[in-house]
Image 1 (cartoon, rainbow, N blue to C red):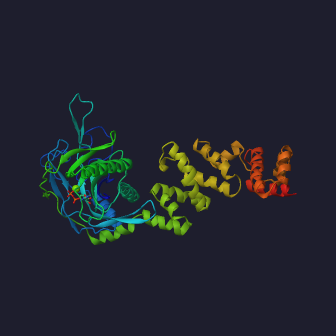
Image 2: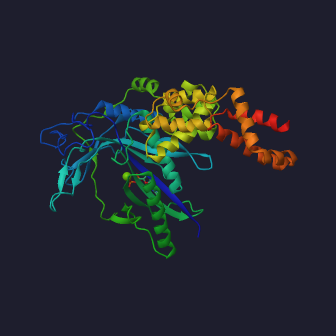
Image 3: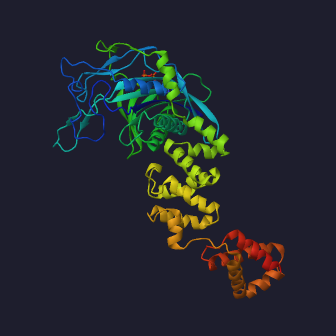
Length: 481
Ligand code: ADP
Ligand code: MG
């Protein structure tokens, strides 16, 4: 049997507001437990929520960026359930009237084709606190610092057809919220987490199969693995003649398996109702028009501009626009050196592998864009060769200063004085008289190979500093004589 996978994702993005969605408490991650929980977050009787306008503005930015309808009136609702980390006994969320309606997100697949994924809605809600099971001799502590942190829950249509597509979609959302500056995207700290709804159906069937939901997956790699193991599990059940139970599951990365958390029968009945403490939020159209003019350049626009303005390939534009930091770094480098293609090659090539080696983000690069651009200028004006430049880059990364300082200090300046190169080649040819003889009597094919040997010898004799182009030209002349 041929199976088709159907996936819909619910992404929770923590909005990067200074304070919480309904109180003035700080939202900074990692503080001492319960130092950032106000009376409102603790749900003391008599306290009332005040909506953080910044959270509304950020949700609207997201809505505009995914071409969504933004509701004129959106309404907060109470989602009722009992849990120790939820002091109010309900989560303030949105149900029937979310702030952001239908929109879409385009993703690029491995083969380069673009696929449009529908966004069903995105709504505002508050995060809950956290139970801490460590360090309490069998007891559990509650940290309410996170209670009331604003979240934007972004719900996709069941348009995704593989784990790879799911990852591409989450990456695209991740890049977008970071471009917009509305979420720091730090998945390890839980700033962006993903619930994966997965079902399978016989290929060709139009109805969806029964789905399971894998809760709170918090890395790109785990999303791919969790979905793939869940697909496999469902295939095995159905091929054995069984049926899928609609349920919530948890992914265990250590065992690479999903486990049942609760079934639909055990699911909570949340008894949603409009929150009487909060007025409906009316979003004026003028506000949206104004906000639209303030949106930064988005990934898609940047990719197109990189191709049009710099003549980059689609692939290069895609890689460089993957994050705002990467794009800015590239643009700054190209501004300094004036050669976009050279800048693109070095940012994507040598610089990226240097960063990968130490597991660094581009924002943490030990070599600044100005430094890299400065070094590329020295390639362009023939002060150093591309090969020597790799040494210079490493030296800059090790803190030896700018390219010019490194070149000066280490004596890496390229030899372009043709007299010097001439002498060096003569000396090298004299030392390899036998090979020169062989070369002169060899056929075309063999000559080609031997020529490379002579270039190598000459470059070595110059410690890599001779201008390779001049070496080539001079050698050709001398060997033909
Ligand atoms: P609920 O109200 O139970 O949360 P929704 O209808 O809102 O369910 O869907 C939640 C998510 O599940 C959405 O992202 C949606 O695309 C996805 N989804 C719905 N049905 C399926 C299915 N059969 N297979 C995979 N994903 C699905
Ligand atoms: Mg849901």
